[in-house]
Length: 113
Image 1 (cartoon, helix red, strand yellow):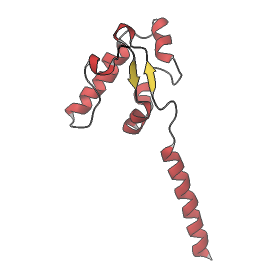
Image 2 (spheres, one colour):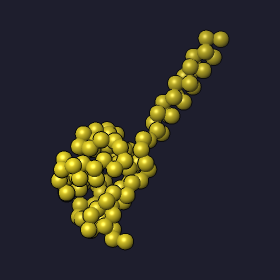
Image 3 (cartoon, helix red, strand yellow):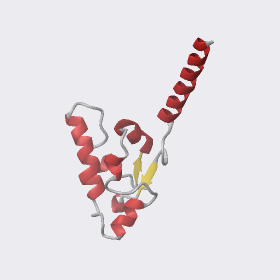
C-alpha cells in the first residue's frame, strides 16, 4: 500500500513538473516594428527556451504587447537600443562562445514587405 501511495505521488509530481516545463508565456512569435528597414519577426518561444530567464530581455522593457514601441515614443528607449545593443550583442556573445546564435546583421532580421 505504501509503495502505491509513493508511486501515485511521484506520478503527480512528474506531471506537475512537465506542465511547468511546457508552459510558455506570451506569444509564440512576435512581429516587431523595425522602422524603415521592415518588420522583425521575433521567435519568442525559441528565446524563452534558450535563455530560460525572462529578465535577460525584460529588465530593459516590460512584458506587455507594444512595450518597445511605447518606450521609444516616450523617449525611454533609443531607436536602435533593443536590436543593436541588446539582441545583436547577445547573438554575437553566443556565437563567440561557440553556441547556436541568432543573426548578427540587420538584414538577416528586418524583412521589408
